[in-house]
Image (cartoon, rainbow, N blue to C red; front, side, top):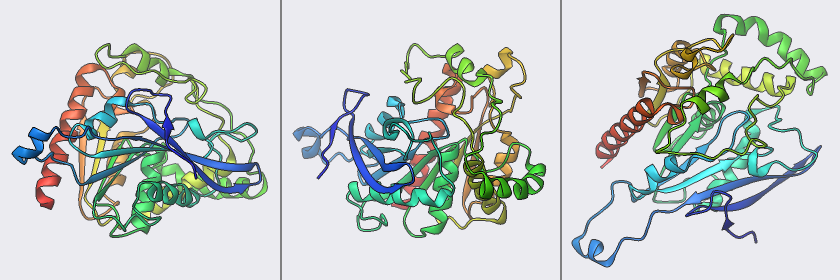
Length: 336
């Protein structure tokens, strides 16, 4: 039986290896990272003080070419009493094994196995419904797309869904219906065909330019390279299929909060503008697509934010956490 061990993040973080079904590249695992809230002192319990999110489990899923490393994001939740968990999906970050194609998958629904294993390890059962604790799903970019699709397929499971710049639509939305049939053919006949690298590393540079000394982060460039991992035809088709499902309308029955930058800046050449905007997604298109997730969607637009709003320059980063806190407090009060 696997056991929790110290995580590479140190401090209060632990990790657990989740064994998954093997594929054509061999054994497959996911990795669950956790941070638990501190145990209240006896005098706090005596006073009957109750932390805002004591009955909450948070499950975070990272984006494309990424992994979990954001300590402050975890501590936002644990400081309010929640148990925080982050999932490095198969073939990403802590879960990447020698001989595997990084990030490769041909159907986003295959991540149901990763999520089920994580929920089981969290004590919620594979479907996430066997616990009295409320479940909050928290996803960034492609992780936001994955969790949105999962939440729609698993009603009455999540109590809230929070998305940090979710990749809900292709960067040229009008071109997606034209590209999709070609992508499907490529995925069928040459699923591991690699697309030309178009990432010039400007997004990574923008994060470095706005690094906050009051909120430092350390990134493993083997797990989160300066230029994104290779894009394979099978994976690209899986993402486009997810976009099509969102465009057709999902049915997430929980309240949804979407955090986005106020602006998009195309990363065609380096400029300071890239340090104050999302250079990955066309945020206006994402905001429109977000309204198709379910009947209760809040869209928060943050001036000066990057693609990962919690890695933006100091002012935008603090505003992102203020908006998140405000939404969580309102949602939590409404649920009582």
